[in-house]
Image 1 (cartoon, helix red, strand yellow):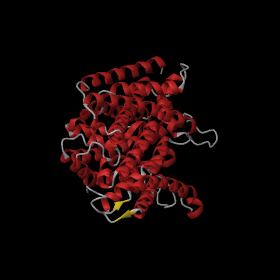
Image 2: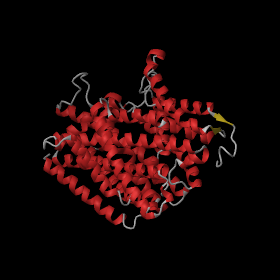
Image 3: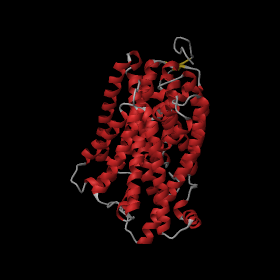
Image 4: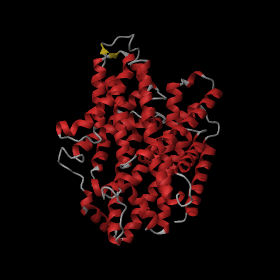
Length: 493
């Protein structure tokens, strides 16, 4: 594929997003920017959330990891369903009862000022790192496919990508994003379906043959029974449940969309149908992964490998095949899909970061609307710069699958949130509020120390379940600094 063609696709796609932004951002206010005036149709929210939840990590890393991990990731996805059940029945009723704009306001009402700021801080850290990881992955693909050949530095590629996202989101915020993410989710799903169809056709597989090929492949193993294996089914399942609770239910990015629904019943409908959709979509991505390796084997294509270990670089498989060995049409489909899924994830994250910082850190509600607009837009620009810096740092140090990196980072940064919300919901005790921030800074360090020594101590290797350990340590630490609840400490339940 020529760089000119790819640049034309990006430009055309961006024009569509700008047109959507123009019509949805007129007369935008803080309420429309933060929660879309609490008037979004539930089915639109459910569909838009698919693209936000998946990101370029799913599009590239999950198909690429099946050679080494099989379908073990499906255990994580099945665990998601339990997490979404908890969100719909425990967290959503709480958020709607309190009519929250930022979900971290709950921590102030339950524990106090420092607990509130601690929760918001860990979200800002977690989402900034997670969003940067996701954009990094796709920017790397575009760099290899287009910009290296043009002599454009990676830093310029990243800056341009983030700047484009900033341009169509800084006015309308969530009100715009619900529409752009609906468009981008549709584009992404069409691209996945077309990619599967074209590869199946290239391998002379009808629908029945496609199902049989995927089902009978050794790469489709879901259940791994060794508890010491990082692919152990029940460990992955539990990790998926807790990852969902924290990365959706305790994350302003995803919950901001849910809070834009008209009422709790609509939000719960959204969560129910979204759960079904996300399981099916992940099955498609894992099936795509099997087909990618089958296609490479059938065509005698040498896949990219790590020169030090000789292992296949999973994150490079789909991009390399799509841009160098698929038909021109299939390559175009791939580029459009990866652009769609990247923008759908990054634009939502940037808006959520702006929302949380404005509401939780700057208390933006105290100002009149004109000043709120100025603060929103400056904050939005500031976080755009933050994402660029994190991406460039990550490029310098990353040496592993991005999906692994994202979830490992989440284990350390979301663990304190898991502990705080669990303690608030499942106990009636109050906290020595000023001790919460030091404790929540300490527990990730303690978790890292245990993880670094677990194989030597217990012959056990932590995977994504490091999040559970971090949350448990935070919970126990909070119990240690707690005392029986009284009205002075905890004015609101």
